[in-house]
Amino acid sequence: MKPSIYLIGVGTYTEVIIELARDCGYEVKGLYHSKADRVGEVVFGVKILASTDELFKKSLKGESFAVTVGNNLMRQNIAIKLRELGGFTPNLIHPTVMISKSAKTGVGCLIHFNACIWTNAKIGNDCVLSPNAMIAHHATMGNGCSVAPFSVVGAYSKIGNRVLFGINSVVLSKELSLGDDCLVGAKANVTKSYGANTTLVGNPARPI
Image (tube, rainbow, N blue to C red; front, side, top):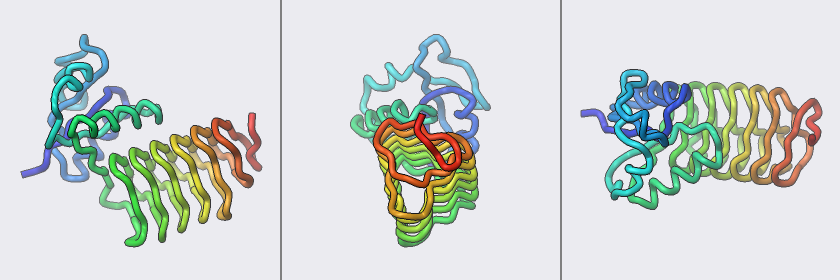
């Protein structure tokens, strides 16, 4: 019998996570949406069972959930709430992912095909690694981050919480850091350390 999982949030990315959950061997039993007027709709063959407000009124002990919300802060907060109510947020890791035996991951992560977490790398809870993303050796990433396809977080770098990496962005492999809630634009090449809430674009990346 396949293990069951429920998904929180209903949008186009939800369809992606339905496929990921199925590839990971789960049966997606239902969806929960913030808007009650969408209850009963069917998305990608899965029914919206109730609103999140209704879900959060009960104990979730023993149930598994994945949060399909793209916004890093919202995804992190919802996942924390689920765990506080007794729910379990397993990592969904596609079978093609390469994770070093020495790497460490938190919980509630969504890790898509061909992603790589290299030797002694560490990522926190509720992170998203898109297809072909790489977290290089000895890099550290906080909670709630999102790494777009073909992006590389270089070796020895230290990334804060809820950092967003655009498509094909690069953090150089040296001891540099990015603070919480930074945004790294598509194709940006980060060569220096920056503090929290910095938006970086260009090659080399500069704050705007």
